[in-house]
Length: 250
Image 1: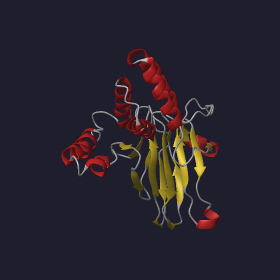
Image 2: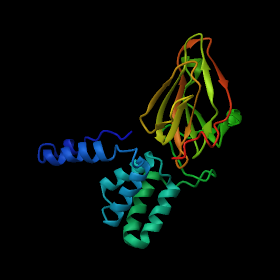
Image 3: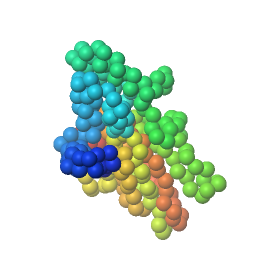
């Protein structure tokens, strides 16, 4: 889901109210929100490429670079995009863009997983304990100590194409699971329903007894915070894997 933009009104609302309205409500409110036509990741790539081609590597470019990262463009992908564009937009423009890339993505060595993805709440360690219930590699970063606060919040990160098996959260009363998407793009699907696109800011409540799965999009990493809603006699039942035919191709 595209983030509601207020920069136009905040900076130019008094001087140029119509321009501010068009920037906030039309460009970001209508054009960027047309995710059924073009994904946020692709819109970010198009925007970054256009700005580099025009030599507009300023503070607004850094914002769009950061937005591209949030929308699932990895550091490796962005580096390849800028390298390719250097031959068309000019070497100096690309050099300037790479300086912004280092600011937004950092210059740490790759972690050996083939991608440089830095989720908001940390990538954590390979989720080996539950690997049998996932297709692809996932990572787990516990955020709370259940013994201290009574609730287990964890940041779960999925590499592109990774998803967990169909599963059900059981409870005699209450229960279920909450997902809060923080980075990248992914999918959530309930049995018998169409997949739901997950983007930063998406919140999903999964009632107890509902068969479902969730994971990353085919071309994007994805991270979400997951925690079990309070309930009585809660448990989790892992079921069959999500097949390639069931997994969304978009």
